[in-house]
Length: 521
Image (cartoon, rainbow, N blue to C red; front, side, top):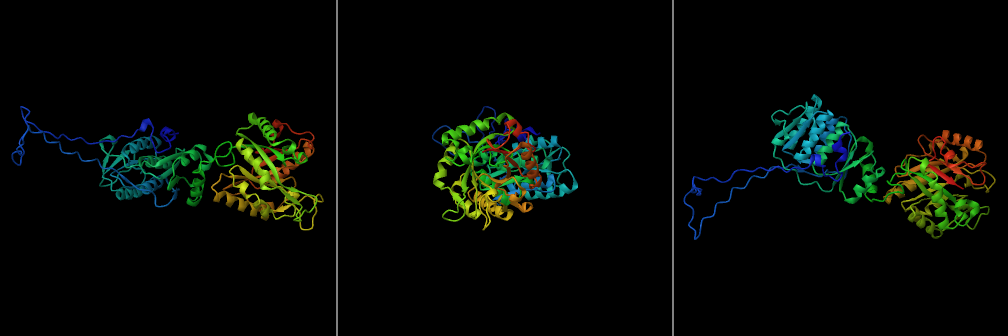
């Protein structure tokens, strides 16, 4: 790992090892003759004065020439060139309009580190030039910049007709004016193109944000850094950042500074949820409703605490609230589903939020249109720590009745709800949301192979919530896991009364794969 990349403050400043140096030129200005008297002016005697003559001021020293930077033309740019040399050239093109000096280096890590230090001191771009293909592109860039000198480090190829020096301290170059309003996301990496591009960004005095990974939402420190200062332009180095449009959307979320319980703005892998499941005030529907709101908060905290020592990520106490409850009677709207009012749920959401909890609103749709039910809770889902769950067990066809069959929801309906929730999350610049799909029979999710799980603003989780003997639950778990889309995380439900016996936290965490959401009903 290159220390200067990792330890330099991410706000565009440079650590002590590469401190900025403004190099100025000082020229001798006075001449004298023996006796210390001023010499006559070569153009004639000095004008008469009424008092003693004052020494003439020394001529002003010429200001050292500085590079000229400019913001990228696009609001968001992703550099994903095929070679390290072209990555270095591209960053130079994006941030520098001109530069009297460029630093040329090979891709050797030692040479790169030395080149980076010199470039940051001088305010000059770093260009990798260690083969014939790179040399042509670098030569074009040096000429575009109008360089009069190049500092050559290591085995870098020189540029014909441009003065080459090996000692950067020979060049009295002033750093450019800080490039305000431009952020550069620099992943922690020893890849030569990334190291060179990061050095160029620091040399341009852009706002450099060092990031772990390739999604700013996943790095709490990057979220904090991007939220401190507004940026009109952002540049990211590496194909993993996706398209410029995706980068722009993710930075817009990160810039809000709003983080999920446990830190960051991506759901996984940064946390594990341990939830009380049920409906407020109704003990028969789950342990969430077995006590009042304050007692439920205390119980959820105690339950989650049992998993702290077992989890390699933060454990987040969670409420999974049944927002629409399956009913045996059709009701006024004829849909066999009782929709809780937003006002009745809001105190539970708000107090859980204040306690640092995550909240999931669960839908038991009956005959209701699933998307229409989800939209009833838009104002709650606009909160950053509120996700959505769907329970297909309680979905009914047009002629079906409750408790006569296990329900099913086709993946097309689930995809419709997911697309809506993804768009809502994006439009409000919210952190990722948890989208939970309950399943204990394969038939509960119709056409599961077509289930969409690739939302950028949602984390889809399949929650195995079967009950009964542990051998039966284990068999169900294996079936659900085997049929699920590749890469999807899983949840597990422990029933306090119906399981025989209920698993301990240690036994629950022994599932393979380990559940990322554990609910108690």
